[in-house]
Length: 54
Image 1 (tube, rainbow, N blue to C red):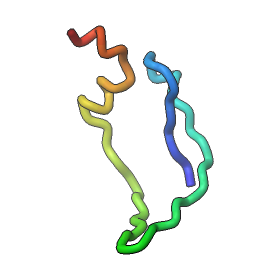
Image 2: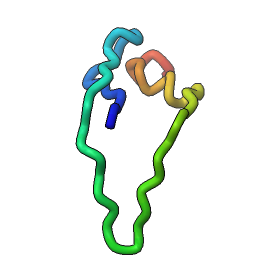
Image 3: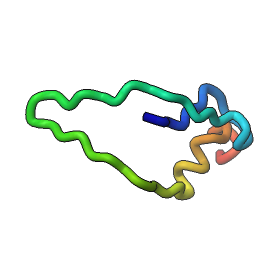
Image 4: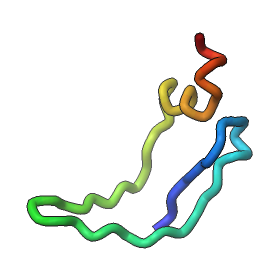
């Protein structure tokens, strides 16, 4: 499956689209396929240095 990952704060170009293994659900868990998702303010803020928001 594809996943978006980042390992440092910065502009959108720090994001990487990677192929990762599909996780296996454990006992009493389910795996849900997501066709789309959203980005909200807290997601966007997570890409930036927290010191910028103090």
